[in-house]
Image (cartoon, rainbow, N blue to C red; front, side, top):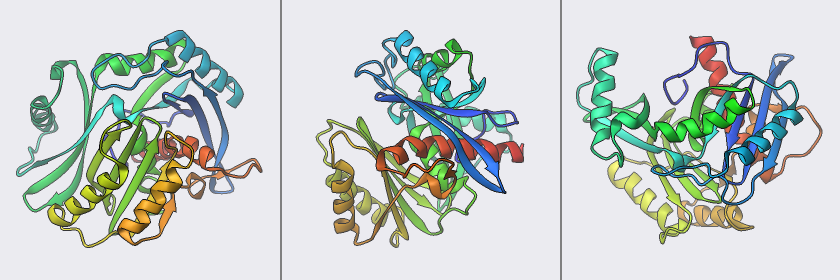
Length: 321
């Protein structure tokens, strides 16, 4: 199953696009011999300050420049896809876990209950928000849900860049949840037991704890925050043991790129020392292989992970719909 309720009607989109502070990236998937392959991919770098992810403020400061970068990336993948799925930074939205002792039977009533709950912590009127959610793990006091909240006008900024090049974003999701779909919506079954995912980007680091295929913990730390990654990992591990009945992680996965060279390697050392486990790289080519003969690099895996995860999700949902 995919992590969030679908905003998409089948068939799946032709390409996935990610707009992040450092680049615009595009990828497409195809099926060959019964296996998924990454048919094409391209990246256009962005100047610092063109995209500034924020939950409460404008995100795109120079739409024409970002549009030009997207057009260039689309030209390199060829075919100018018209229907796309869009990935945006984690910091452009608020991802949270909520629990209800009793879940309304009617979807409309559940929608209202979720929005009422999110209203209390939203830094802007809930009427101005885009909200989506999906049922998660059963808990002792009821049912858990993972929710994503973002300002409607912020989402429109990203969508408008796509529209400017003739592409319609039928589905929007955040980067780390898209990475998770490499495993949850991939061809292989999701890891069993409890597993930890650490997704690093130059402007933030997100930590996610999964229980089988359900998110049971999510936290993003903006870069520049006083809390160091080792502190964040320690606090997360203690919360997992004390509040989530954690019995230990079956797997730990790490991917992305940090703000400085070597940040991911240093994070791997900290994680292995703190958790006493081997840390695996997040490798999108395990879900879909590359058609070219270019060897994978950490930077390429960082580019492809959310894009391939998003495309896997849309393919699964197109089958389910």
